[in-house]
Image 1 (cartoon, rainbow, N blue to C red):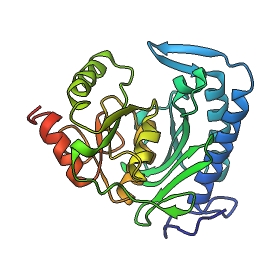
Image 2: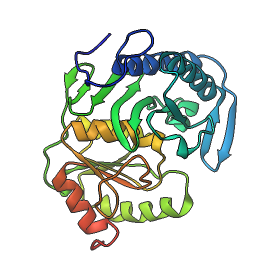
Image 3: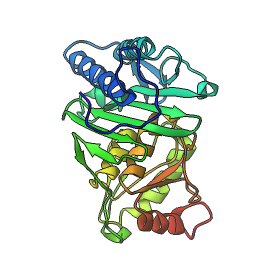
Length: 275
């Protein structure tokens, strides 16, 4: 069901639906499959240290891709598990992650989500992040605002890093993870508190709705952040790299929050900052 916002000029799906509704339907379908998968045994494969993939990831991704191709056969698709090339991001492209927070999912920690974003070149037009456990659907469309289950959301107005709840995750690349741990060892005593959530996508969604004042990460992929980029922007916040430059879907390192908090973090801990 449409939530009442749309962007003029985007092609309609074969079924006559608008892009936003197709993205929502894909995310909700994937979410229900993930919940069903929790009830059954999962085949788990280790892609690299700490980086797992389950048979559920792959099954969900296949179903989402099939659904999106049926609705928009002319659109490209970039997804985590399908082996898509980053060069496929041209023209209209669906960027999807069938399961962000796989480690949480495998161990039964209820913090994971589905991402479905529509990108044209490097610009994110629509972003959906769906948390099926809590039935929370985060939605943004460029120029139309950001919403949580239909209610408009905005980033925190907190102006002091020292009073902030800061989210972070370490990722799977050792050097970058160690660098962020080093920052965190200083940061934890200077902020209100730190939280490792295990899902960059939920971290960005929580910035968009004001639950996190700031979120930082140093090793990401387009499917991790595409939806979150437009969510945070449309909620009034910023997502920048560690030099303070505007982030896009190919940015590996991000800082997300309101303008003042991003500036404070970059000045103290960013590359070229005073940290």
